[in-house]
Length: 308
Image 1 (cartoon, rainbow, N blue to C red):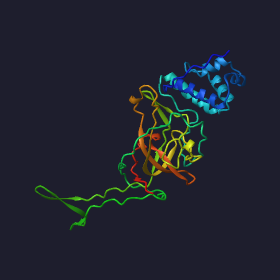
Image 2: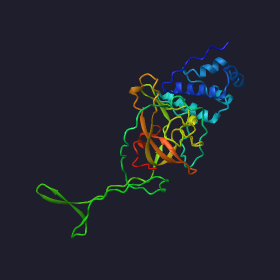
Image 3: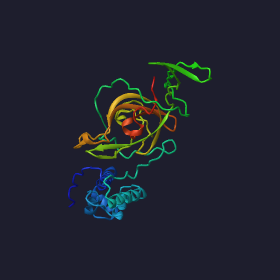
Image 4: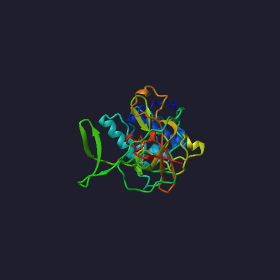
């Protein structure tokens, strides 16, 4: 008789992550370990040990496990190889799962969602404060702003034509006047390219790929897959790129697994109510929360606040 499967604690290490995704694969297939054994040719105990997270299963067992569940064996071979390298080198950070594409969504087909809406995505109830002013950056050529987006006109300093032909501004200082070139304040950028980081902060240090993909939504609220505001076909994993045009405030989200011990010490955890308006490759526009972007893409990215 097969022994009950023990609870697996995710700590972000390579062996535990491999075990987690093997378990997730079996659960998603709907197979029992007995059925999996019949399909794979390996015993129940061997398959349970492969998904226990205590040691690295052989490549043969891993691929048989994946094939029996209907998964892509080539993707799982690449993933197993990456995990083995991490284990051999003593690296504690786990590589991304086999379905983490890292492709640009403007040039690739959307990724099929791996499973149901993850329970790790939790919205925190909080009132939205006043919109903060994003940073500004140099103008960049690019596509026109989508409908409802304004590009504020930058304030200009008064220019005075000097005899030399330079545009100068007079500034009063103790002891007299000094003249300086008058720089223009940069206008907001038309668009920015940001990178998805579809990861969950767990415990004091771990940052691991979420069980389900991120996606665009028609509203700035959480759990849109269940609430009817998800833009179907816009699923993304870590590494995907998005073109965003403006930012706004919405429901406050967190990428933290708030039930995990030591989460308050995790530097990868982020909580924010800032959302971007983004454009999908088929022309649809939707919203995406900054908590599921790399740090470089957070904070407004020099874009204007969305209007309308």
